[in-house]
Length: 454
Image (tube, rainbow, N blue to C red; front, side, top):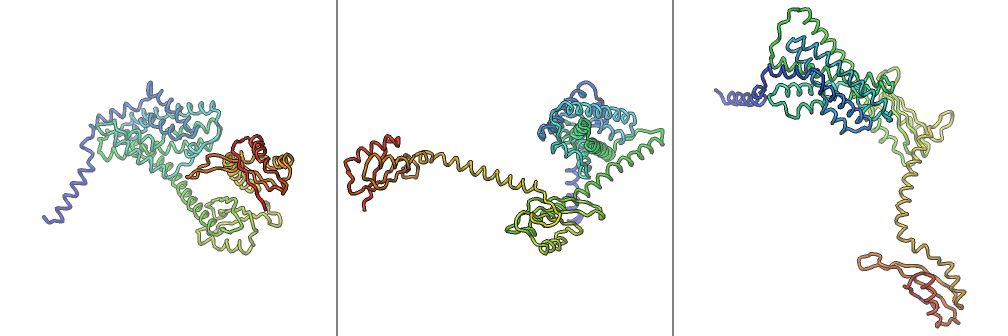
Protein backbone atom coordinates (compact mmCIF):
# COMPACT_ATOMS: atom_id res chain seq x y z
CA UNK A 1 0.00 0.00 0.00
CA UNK A 2 1.38 3.40 -0.97
CA UNK A 3 2.04 6.19 1.51
CA UNK A 4 -0.68 8.37 -0.03
CA UNK A 5 -3.24 5.57 0.21
CA UNK A 6 -2.29 4.94 3.81
CA UNK A 7 -2.68 8.62 4.72
CA UNK A 8 -6.03 8.74 2.93
CA UNK A 9 -7.33 5.71 4.83
CA UNK A 10 -6.19 7.12 8.16
CA UNK A 11 -7.79 10.48 7.40
CA UNK A 12 -11.01 8.78 6.31
CA UNK A 13 -11.10 6.70 9.50
CA UNK A 14 -10.44 9.80 11.62
CA UNK A 15 -13.25 11.80 9.98
CA UNK A 16 -15.66 8.86 10.20
CA UNK A 17 -14.90 8.41 13.89
CA UNK A 18 -15.40 12.09 14.63
CA UNK A 19 -18.74 12.34 12.81
CA UNK A 20 -20.07 8.98 13.96
CA UNK A 21 -23.55 9.21 15.51
CA UNK A 22 -23.92 5.60 16.56
CA UNK A 23 -21.70 5.61 19.64
CA UNK A 24 -24.13 7.48 21.93
CA UNK A 25 -27.39 7.02 20.05
CA UNK A 26 -30.51 5.73 21.76
CA UNK A 27 -32.42 2.81 20.35
CA UNK A 28 -34.85 3.67 17.58
CA UNK A 29 -37.84 2.48 19.56
CA UNK A 30 -36.77 4.58 22.54
CA UNK A 31 -36.52 7.66 20.34
CA UNK A 32 -39.94 7.02 18.78
CA UNK A 33 -41.55 6.49 22.19
CA UNK A 34 -39.96 9.62 23.64
CA UNK A 35 -41.03 11.85 20.75
CA UNK A 36 -44.54 10.33 20.71
CA UNK A 37 -44.95 11.06 24.43
CA UNK A 38 -43.91 14.69 23.90
CA UNK A 39 -46.61 15.25 21.31
CA UNK A 40 -49.57 15.28 23.69
CA UNK A 41 -50.50 18.61 25.27
CA UNK A 42 -52.40 18.33 28.51
CA UNK A 43 -51.90 18.99 32.19
CA UNK A 44 -48.40 20.28 32.93
CA UNK A 45 -47.42 20.88 29.30
CA UNK A 46 -50.52 22.98 28.69
CA UNK A 47 -49.99 25.18 31.74
CA UNK A 48 -46.30 25.63 30.94
CA UNK A 49 -47.28 26.65 27.39
CA UNK A 50 -49.70 29.29 28.69
CA UNK A 51 -47.18 30.69 31.15
CA UNK A 52 -44.44 30.72 28.49
CA UNK A 53 -46.81 32.60 26.17
CA UNK A 54 -47.53 35.23 28.80
CA UNK A 55 -43.83 35.64 29.61
CA UNK A 56 -42.95 36.02 25.92
CA UNK A 57 -45.79 38.51 25.43
CA UNK A 58 -44.54 40.53 28.37
CA UNK A 59 -41.01 40.49 26.93
CA UNK A 60 -42.29 41.67 23.55
CA UNK A 61 -44.41 44.34 25.23
CA UNK A 62 -41.51 45.85 27.17
CA UNK A 63 -38.96 45.10 24.41
CA UNK A 64 -36.84 42.85 26.64
CA UNK A 65 -34.74 40.30 24.77
CA UNK A 66 -33.75 38.50 27.98
CA UNK A 67 -37.38 37.87 28.95
CA UNK A 68 -38.19 36.59 25.46
CA UNK A 69 -35.26 34.17 25.58
CA UNK A 70 -36.41 32.92 28.97
CA UNK A 71 -39.88 32.23 27.59
CA UNK A 72 -38.45 30.32 24.64
CA UNK A 73 -36.36 28.16 26.97
CA UNK A 74 -39.40 26.88 28.89
CA UNK A 75 -41.75 26.66 25.91
CA UNK A 76 -42.81 23.07 25.03
CA UNK A 77 -43.70 23.88 21.41
CA UNK A 78 -41.09 21.62 19.83
CA UNK A 79 -42.83 18.32 20.71
CA UNK A 80 -45.65 18.10 18.12
CA UNK A 81 -43.49 19.62 15.37
CA UNK A 82 -40.76 17.02 15.79
CA UNK A 83 -43.55 14.44 16.01
CA UNK A 84 -44.77 15.47 12.54
CA UNK A 85 -41.27 15.06 11.08
CA UNK A 86 -40.86 11.67 12.74
CA UNK A 87 -44.30 10.53 11.49
CA UNK A 88 -43.37 11.47 7.93
CA UNK A 89 -40.03 9.69 8.23
CA UNK A 90 -41.48 6.37 9.42
CA UNK A 91 -44.89 6.54 7.68
CA UNK A 92 -46.77 6.61 10.99
CA UNK A 93 -49.91 8.48 9.96
CA UNK A 94 -51.61 7.93 13.32
CA UNK A 95 -48.74 9.78 14.98
CA UNK A 96 -49.03 12.48 12.31
CA UNK A 97 -52.73 12.99 13.00
CA UNK A 98 -52.10 13.20 16.72
CA UNK A 99 -49.20 15.64 16.21
CA UNK A 100 -51.20 17.88 13.86
CA UNK A 101 -54.17 17.87 16.24
CA UNK A 102 -52.03 18.86 19.23
CA UNK A 103 -50.05 21.39 17.17
CA UNK A 104 -53.26 23.12 16.11
CA UNK A 105 -54.55 23.10 19.68
CA UNK A 106 -51.39 24.58 21.17
CA UNK A 107 -51.23 27.22 18.42
CA UNK A 108 -54.78 28.36 19.18
CA UNK A 109 -54.11 28.38 22.93
CA UNK A 110 -50.93 30.45 22.51
CA UNK A 111 -52.57 32.99 20.21
CA UNK A 112 -55.59 33.33 22.51
CA UNK A 113 -53.40 33.80 25.60
CA UNK A 114 -51.21 36.42 23.90
CA UNK A 115 -54.23 38.22 22.43
CA UNK A 116 -55.84 38.46 25.87
CA UNK A 117 -52.57 39.78 27.32
CA UNK A 118 -52.19 42.52 24.72
CA UNK A 119 -55.85 43.53 25.08
CA UNK A 120 -55.28 44.06 28.81
CA UNK A 121 -51.79 45.59 28.46
CA UNK A 122 -51.67 49.42 28.55
CA UNK A 123 -48.73 49.43 26.11
CA UNK A 124 -50.09 49.22 22.57
CA UNK A 125 -47.13 50.48 20.50
CA UNK A 126 -45.05 48.02 18.47
CA UNK A 127 -41.51 47.67 19.83
CA UNK A 128 -38.49 46.53 17.80
CA UNK A 129 -38.75 42.96 19.12
CA UNK A 130 -42.32 42.78 17.83
CA UNK A 131 -41.47 44.27 14.44
CA UNK A 132 -38.63 41.77 13.99
CA UNK A 133 -41.23 38.95 13.90
CA UNK A 134 -43.31 40.37 11.05
CA UNK A 135 -40.92 40.15 8.07
CA UNK A 136 -39.79 36.52 7.55
CA UNK A 137 -37.04 35.89 5.00
CA UNK A 138 -35.00 33.03 3.59
CA UNK A 139 -32.62 33.42 6.52
CA UNK A 140 -35.42 32.36 8.86
CA UNK A 141 -35.88 29.25 6.70
CA UNK A 142 -32.20 28.36 7.06
CA UNK A 143 -32.21 29.04 10.81
CA UNK A 144 -35.22 26.79 11.29
CA UNK A 145 -33.68 24.03 9.16
CA UNK A 146 -30.39 24.03 11.03
CA UNK A 147 -32.15 24.40 14.38
CA UNK A 148 -34.48 21.51 13.60
CA UNK A 149 -31.53 19.35 12.58
CA UNK A 150 -29.79 20.11 15.88
CA UNK A 151 -32.99 19.33 17.76
CA UNK A 152 -33.54 15.89 16.24
CA UNK A 153 -29.86 15.01 16.70
CA UNK A 154 -30.25 15.78 20.41
CA UNK A 155 -33.49 13.82 20.59
CA UNK A 156 -31.85 10.68 19.20
CA UNK A 157 -29.11 10.62 21.85
CA UNK A 158 -29.21 8.57 25.02
CA UNK A 159 -28.46 11.65 27.10
CA UNK A 160 -31.16 14.23 26.37
CA UNK A 161 -30.31 16.52 29.30
CA UNK A 162 -27.92 18.71 27.31
CA UNK A 163 -28.50 22.36 26.45
CA UNK A 164 -29.21 21.59 22.80
CA UNK A 165 -33.01 21.49 23.06
CA UNK A 166 -33.31 24.88 24.85
CA UNK A 167 -30.80 26.28 22.36
CA UNK A 168 -32.90 25.05 19.45
CA UNK A 169 -36.00 26.58 21.03
CA UNK A 170 -34.19 29.94 21.22
CA UNK A 171 -32.72 29.78 17.71
CA UNK A 172 -35.91 28.77 15.93
CA UNK A 173 -38.03 31.25 17.93
CA UNK A 174 -41.42 29.53 17.84
CA UNK A 175 -43.04 31.37 20.72
CA UNK A 176 -42.40 35.07 19.80
CA UNK A 177 -44.15 34.87 16.37
CA UNK A 178 -47.25 33.40 18.00
CA UNK A 179 -47.27 36.22 20.57
CA UNK A 180 -46.76 38.79 17.82
CA UNK A 181 -49.73 37.29 15.98
CA UNK A 182 -51.73 37.77 19.19
CA UNK A 183 -50.58 41.40 19.28
CA UNK A 184 -51.82 41.84 15.71
CA UNK A 185 -55.24 40.48 16.65
CA UNK A 186 -55.46 42.54 19.85
CA UNK A 187 -54.58 45.79 18.03
CA UNK A 188 -56.44 44.85 14.81
CA UNK A 189 -53.27 45.07 12.72
CA UNK A 190 -53.64 42.21 10.28
CA UNK A 191 -50.24 42.82 8.66
CA UNK A 192 -48.59 41.94 11.98
CA UNK A 193 -50.84 38.92 12.40
CA UNK A 194 -50.18 37.53 8.90
CA UNK A 195 -46.42 38.24 8.94
CA UNK A 196 -45.89 36.70 12.37
CA UNK A 197 -48.06 33.68 11.58
CA UNK A 198 -46.12 33.14 8.36
CA UNK A 199 -42.84 33.23 10.28
CA UNK A 200 -44.24 30.69 12.75
CA UNK A 201 -45.38 28.53 9.81
CA UNK A 202 -41.86 28.72 8.29
CA UNK A 203 -40.19 27.66 11.55
CA UNK A 204 -42.67 24.87 12.13
CA UNK A 205 -42.39 23.40 8.61
CA UNK A 206 -38.59 23.63 8.47
CA UNK A 207 -38.14 21.97 11.87
CA UNK A 208 -40.43 19.15 10.75
CA UNK A 209 -38.56 18.87 7.43
CA UNK A 210 -35.16 18.73 9.17
CA UNK A 211 -36.52 16.02 11.47
CA UNK A 212 -37.82 14.03 8.49
CA UNK A 213 -34.51 14.27 6.62
CA UNK A 214 -32.47 13.22 9.64
CA UNK A 215 -34.78 10.28 10.40
CA UNK A 216 -34.28 9.10 6.85
CA UNK A 217 -30.52 9.67 7.16
CA UNK A 218 -30.46 7.41 10.22
CA UNK A 219 -32.48 4.84 8.23
CA UNK A 220 -35.33 4.41 10.67
CA UNK A 221 -37.59 1.61 9.39
CA UNK A 222 -40.76 2.68 7.62
CA UNK A 223 -44.11 1.24 8.53
CA UNK A 224 -45.94 -0.64 5.83
CA UNK A 225 -48.60 1.54 4.23
CA UNK A 226 -51.52 -0.28 2.67
CA UNK A 227 -52.90 2.79 0.96
CA UNK A 228 -50.34 3.93 -1.62
CA UNK A 229 -52.55 6.82 -2.66
CA UNK A 230 -52.40 8.24 0.84
CA UNK A 231 -48.62 8.13 0.79
CA UNK A 232 -48.47 9.91 -2.57
CA UNK A 233 -50.98 12.50 -1.34
CA UNK A 234 -48.87 13.20 1.75
CA UNK A 235 -45.75 13.68 -0.37
CA UNK A 236 -47.67 16.04 -2.67
CA UNK A 237 -48.85 18.09 0.31
CA UNK A 238 -45.26 18.24 1.59
CA UNK A 239 -44.06 19.61 -1.76
CA UNK A 240 -46.80 22.24 -1.84
CA UNK A 241 -46.09 23.31 1.73
CA UNK A 242 -42.34 23.63 1.11
CA UNK A 243 -43.06 25.72 -2.00
CA UNK A 244 -45.31 28.00 0.04
CA UNK A 245 -42.54 28.35 2.63
CA UNK A 246 -39.51 28.82 0.40
CA UNK A 247 -40.73 30.92 -2.54
CA UNK A 248 -42.19 33.94 -0.65
CA UNK A 249 -39.40 33.95 1.92
CA UNK A 250 -36.79 33.86 -0.85
CA UNK A 251 -38.40 36.84 -2.57
CA UNK A 252 -38.48 38.78 0.70
CA UNK A 253 -34.83 37.88 1.42
CA UNK A 254 -33.71 39.08 -2.02
CA UNK A 255 -35.61 42.34 -1.51
CA UNK A 256 -34.05 42.75 1.95
CA UNK A 257 -30.51 42.20 0.68
CA UNK A 258 -30.96 44.62 -2.22
CA UNK A 259 -32.48 47.24 0.09
CA UNK A 260 -29.56 46.89 2.53
CA UNK A 261 -27.07 47.37 -0.32
CA UNK A 262 -29.07 50.38 -1.54
CA UNK A 263 -29.06 52.02 1.91
CA UNK A 264 -25.31 51.46 2.23
CA UNK A 265 -24.65 53.01 -1.18
CA UNK A 266 -26.84 56.02 -0.34
CA UNK A 267 -25.01 56.64 2.93
CA UNK A 268 -21.63 56.45 1.20
CA UNK A 269 -22.83 58.74 -1.63
CA UNK A 270 -24.31 61.42 0.65
CA UNK A 271 -21.32 61.46 3.04
CA UNK A 272 -18.87 61.82 0.16
CA UNK A 273 -20.61 64.03 -2.42
CA UNK A 274 -22.64 66.34 -0.17
CA UNK A 275 -19.75 67.20 2.12
CA UNK A 276 -19.67 71.02 2.03
CA UNK A 277 -18.20 73.43 4.56
CA UNK A 278 -21.18 75.78 4.84
CA UNK A 279 -24.03 73.43 4.00
CA UNK A 280 -25.36 70.65 6.18
CA UNK A 281 -27.50 67.65 5.30
CA UNK A 282 -30.30 67.84 7.83
CA UNK A 283 -32.31 64.86 6.64
CA UNK A 284 -31.89 62.01 4.18
CA UNK A 285 -35.01 60.02 3.30
CA UNK A 286 -34.81 57.03 0.99
CA UNK A 287 -37.47 54.99 -0.77
CA UNK A 288 -36.37 51.67 -2.24
CA UNK A 289 -38.40 50.07 -5.01
CA UNK A 290 -37.71 47.04 -7.19
CA UNK A 291 -40.03 48.20 -9.96
CA UNK A 292 -38.45 50.02 -12.89
CA UNK A 293 -41.71 51.91 -13.41
CA UNK A 294 -41.35 53.63 -10.05
CA UNK A 295 -37.64 54.30 -9.40
CA UNK A 296 -36.06 54.46 -5.96
CA UNK A 297 -35.64 57.96 -4.58
CA UNK A 298 -33.25 59.89 -2.36
CA UNK A 299 -34.66 63.03 -0.74
CA UNK A 300 -32.22 65.42 0.94
CA UNK A 301 -32.95 68.47 3.09
CA UNK A 302 -30.04 70.93 3.16
CA UNK A 303 -29.44 73.88 5.49
CA UNK A 304 -26.83 76.56 4.92
CA UNK A 305 -25.44 78.16 1.79
CA UNK A 306 -27.58 77.48 -1.24
CA UNK A 307 -25.98 75.01 -3.65
CA UNK A 308 -26.29 75.95 -7.31
CA UNK A 309 -28.16 73.83 -9.83
CA UNK A 310 -24.87 73.07 -11.60
CA UNK A 311 -23.41 71.58 -8.42
CA UNK A 312 -26.54 69.48 -7.86
CA UNK A 313 -26.45 68.26 -11.47
CA UNK A 314 -22.81 67.30 -10.96
CA UNK A 315 -23.82 65.38 -7.83
CA UNK A 316 -26.46 63.54 -9.84
CA UNK A 317 -23.91 62.60 -12.48
CA UNK A 318 -21.81 60.86 -9.81
CA UNK A 319 -24.64 58.57 -8.65
CA UNK A 320 -23.79 55.66 -11.02
CA UNK A 321 -20.32 55.48 -9.46
CA UNK A 322 -22.01 54.58 -6.15
CA UNK A 323 -24.30 51.92 -7.57
CA UNK A 324 -27.30 54.28 -7.69
CA UNK A 325 -28.26 54.05 -11.34
CA UNK A 326 -31.85 55.01 -12.17
CA UNK A 327 -32.29 56.52 -8.70
CA UNK A 328 -34.09 59.85 -8.46
CA UNK A 329 -32.42 62.58 -6.37
CA UNK A 330 -34.60 65.30 -4.82
CA UNK A 331 -32.88 68.19 -3.00
CA UNK A 332 -34.68 70.75 -0.81
CA UNK A 333 -32.85 73.94 0.21
CA UNK A 334 -33.81 76.82 2.44
CA UNK A 335 -33.82 79.50 -0.27
CA UNK A 336 -35.36 77.65 -3.18
CA UNK A 337 -37.49 79.77 -5.47
CA UNK A 338 -40.79 78.63 -6.76
CA UNK A 339 -43.28 76.31 -5.17
CA UNK A 340 -40.77 73.99 -3.54
CA UNK A 341 -41.58 73.68 0.13
CA UNK A 342 -39.22 72.75 2.89
CA UNK A 343 -39.85 70.26 5.62
CA UNK A 344 -39.28 72.62 8.52
CA UNK A 345 -39.74 69.77 10.96
CA UNK A 346 -36.23 68.59 10.08
CA UNK A 347 -34.86 72.11 10.59
CA UNK A 348 -36.66 72.29 13.92
CA UNK A 349 -35.21 68.89 14.85
CA UNK A 350 -31.69 70.11 14.05
CA UNK A 351 -32.10 73.26 16.10
CA UNK A 352 -33.62 71.22 18.92
CA UNK A 353 -30.53 69.01 18.99
CA UNK A 354 -28.32 72.12 18.93
CA UNK A 355 -30.34 73.69 21.75
CA UNK A 356 -30.03 70.54 23.86
CA UNK A 357 -26.28 70.58 23.34
CA UNK A 358 -26.10 74.24 24.41
CA UNK A 359 -28.24 73.54 27.47
CA UNK A 360 -25.88 70.74 28.50
CA UNK A 361 -22.93 73.10 28.05
CA UNK A 362 -24.66 75.77 30.15
CA UNK A 363 -25.33 73.22 32.88
CA UNK A 364 -21.65 72.25 32.96
CA UNK A 365 -20.61 75.91 33.16
CA UNK A 366 -23.04 76.50 35.99
CA UNK A 367 -21.48 73.66 37.94
CA UNK A 368 -18.05 75.17 37.48
CA UNK A 369 -19.42 78.58 38.41
CA UNK A 370 -20.50 77.35 41.82
CA UNK A 371 -16.86 77.44 42.94
CA UNK A 372 -16.66 81.14 42.08
CA UNK A 373 -19.98 82.18 43.58
CA UNK A 374 -18.29 83.80 46.56
CA UNK A 375 -16.31 86.06 44.24
CA UNK A 376 -19.39 87.24 42.40
CA UNK A 377 -21.33 88.01 45.59
CA UNK A 378 -18.83 90.70 46.59
CA UNK A 379 -20.50 94.09 45.97
CA UNK A 380 -17.30 95.79 44.91
CA UNK A 381 -18.84 98.94 43.42
CA UNK A 382 -21.06 99.78 46.40
CA UNK A 383 -18.29 98.93 48.87
CA UNK A 384 -15.92 101.25 47.04
CA UNK A 385 -18.43 104.11 47.30
CA UNK A 386 -18.94 103.45 51.01
CA UNK A 387 -15.20 103.30 51.59
CA UNK A 388 -14.56 106.65 49.88
CA UNK A 389 -17.46 108.25 51.76
CA UNK A 390 -16.29 106.94 55.12
CA UNK A 391 -12.57 107.75 54.72
CA UNK A 392 -11.82 110.97 52.83
CA UNK A 393 -8.89 111.72 50.58
CA UNK A 394 -9.05 108.41 48.64
CA UNK A 395 -9.02 108.85 44.87
CA UNK A 396 -9.45 105.25 43.63
CA UNK A 397 -10.50 101.95 45.22
CA UNK A 398 -10.33 98.43 43.79
CA UNK A 399 -11.34 95.31 45.70
CA UNK A 400 -11.95 91.67 44.90
CA UNK A 401 -11.63 88.20 46.35
CA UNK A 402 -8.70 86.04 45.32
CA UNK A 403 -8.05 82.33 45.72
CA UNK A 404 -5.07 81.04 47.68
CA UNK A 405 -3.46 77.87 46.27
CA UNK A 406 -1.10 75.35 47.83
CA UNK A 407 2.02 73.78 46.29
CA UNK A 408 0.04 71.25 44.22
CA UNK A 409 -2.40 73.80 42.83
CA UNK A 410 -5.39 73.19 45.10
CA UNK A 411 -7.59 76.11 46.15
CA UNK A 412 -7.35 76.18 49.95
CA UNK A 413 -8.64 79.63 50.91
CA UNK A 414 -9.81 83.06 49.74
CA UNK A 415 -8.57 86.52 50.69
CA UNK A 416 -10.08 89.98 50.20
CA UNK A 417 -7.60 92.25 48.43
CA UNK A 418 -8.21 96.01 48.55
CA UNK A 419 -6.06 98.40 46.50
CA UNK A 420 -6.18 102.12 47.37
CA UNK A 421 -4.83 105.19 45.65
CA UNK A 422 -4.77 107.85 48.39
CA UNK A 423 -4.61 111.58 47.82
CA UNK A 424 -1.82 113.70 49.26
CA UNK A 425 -3.92 114.62 52.29
CA UNK A 426 -4.67 110.98 53.21
CA UNK A 427 -4.15 110.13 56.86
CA UNK A 428 -2.61 106.63 57.12
CA UNK A 429 -3.72 106.36 60.74
CA UNK A 430 -7.13 105.45 59.43
CA UNK A 431 -5.86 102.25 57.83
CA UNK A 432 -6.76 100.20 60.91
CA UNK A 433 -10.28 101.55 60.83
CA UNK A 434 -10.50 100.72 57.13
CA UNK A 435 -9.28 97.18 57.68
CA UNK A 436 -11.86 96.52 60.43
CA UNK A 437 -14.60 97.90 58.19
CA UNK A 438 -13.51 95.58 55.36
CA UNK A 439 -13.61 92.56 57.71
CA UNK A 440 -17.19 93.37 58.70
CA UNK A 441 -18.39 94.41 55.27
CA UNK A 442 -16.60 91.62 53.38
CA UNK A 443 -17.47 88.98 55.99
CA UNK A 444 -13.90 87.70 56.26
CA UNK A 445 -10.91 88.13 58.56
CA UNK A 446 -8.40 87.69 55.75
CA UNK A 447 -7.76 91.21 54.42
CA UNK A 448 -4.84 92.48 52.37
CA UNK A 449 -4.43 96.25 51.83
CA UNK A 450 -2.23 97.75 49.13
CA UNK A 451 -1.46 101.39 48.47
CA UNK A 452 -0.62 102.71 45.06
CA UNK A 453 1.22 106.01 45.10
CA UNK A 454 2.45 107.95 42.12
